Length: 460
Image 1 (tube, helix red, strand yellow):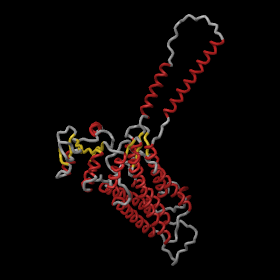
Image 2 (image 1 turned 60 degrees about the vertical axis):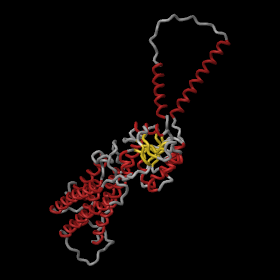
Image 3 (image 1 turned 180 degrees about the vertical axis):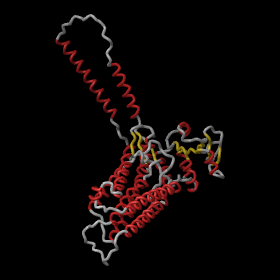
Image 4 (image 1 turned 45 degrees about the vertical axis):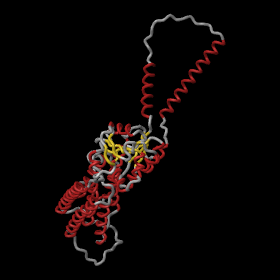
């Protein structure tokens, strides 16, 4: 908490809002009785030197509050002491806008990721320097509640009371002056009602302040509940981006080997095969990018970037499994076709499907689809694969289509995409290799995620 309020007021608010859970010590300036700075409790019954023998014991037993004057004094002490004590300060009170900025900059320099909430001009500098700035629009929620109450009252008053029998008065004959007076009064009332409606409309329009201009995020309410939404959305976006990099890396490696094998034998994929592969992968890429975060904020923390042991070992381990499966299936396919007689292959020859082409194509497309199912993160940062229905149905549809190509369940489809009929034993080999490959890749990824897949909170 960084505020310009009195230290005692700030400490009380921090305690009520559970910013602090341990007794608070305030850094107190020298007085007439004591000519040195010291840590003093809120009730003035505890006094400790500013630099105790063991700082760890101090921060383990107490939460700290530093005033703006105290922050200026800490700047005169050795920088190592300031670096040690700064992360443990829970409340900064009586600080100037410039000191708010200094607090955020100092925490940034110490390697922390800072998020700053502010609602006024005095928070602009700190909001600019924070990694995540959130501007709060004060008074908007209260105005809305007041407006809703007024609308309820107006609609209640609009209900007409039951009719009561009255005696109709005799019509009065008005003079021209009285008629003109009555018309002016009615016009005045209509004008007042129009002004009132315009004022109510202006109240519903959110007016952005200086804090909103300085911060990348603006909340329409005056509470910090929006911080949870920002973190949930940010984590979901981060995890989606990281898993997309893994999927792209694995798919590129699989496709590179598949095309290399075909190229060495003078074989290529047909246009229809490329089209089918592109459509199936496009559907998976589309739906995996539309994952939504969970409603609750998880205690776990995602990895901050792709350069970590989990990502590198997972990609290499999964590719080793995929490469082994591809090499095994390609060798089995070569055993079932006549050996090549010519010394050099004709790279410009027309496309002619054969067992190697069909086997490599089916394995390639199956393994690329499997990378989506294996590397989808899901809980605790985004909805699970079962909850992401479009992606789940896309993967199921792709696997079903591949199975129909393997076992020739739809002869017209097999002929359309120029897949040759496989011997029965070759079909079973491809099927079992695909199942084993997916299971083994999934085990590798989940085991590595359990041991290496969570970021640790910075210790101080």
